[in-house]
Image (cartoon, rainbow, N blue to C red; front, side, top):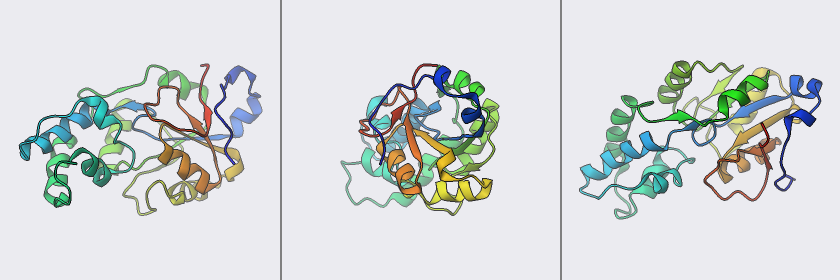
Length: 212
């Protein structure tokens, strides 16, 4: 069972534990404040449909379940619409504007520096996620993206695949995210879940990754 939210002070964590624990991160909303660029792409789709633009806060609340889920939630005025052509409009625009407005959250660089072992697992497609982490200079022991063939969150299968690839026991790994989808994936994979304090979502389980 996942514990209730508590503050985590890294100064109280034994260095040997830190050295052996693999911290696996989500990307959007966890490491990267990508809401503004995602909103621009969503609104390009909405403009194609003659719908008014959405504010960043509404789009951010729909992020986490993959592109199909994002578009469905951001196009509620058009239930049942064929998402195929709209996905292409979104992807064409977003691929050209990955980091126009998106920035790492303020504490992220410091967090990554303090954790000797880190990996990445996100529902974001590799064609978007890989260039982002490359441009930001982030290095991970392993990465799994949403289109790598291991399923998608909230299934824990991508996390299980990453642990298997790295030879890491679930008891020595933590998944760090910002949504209930992340928490479900961690629970399904048998990992502890830590919630970033800047999460814009209501998540009832998991530790809070505080006190850096």
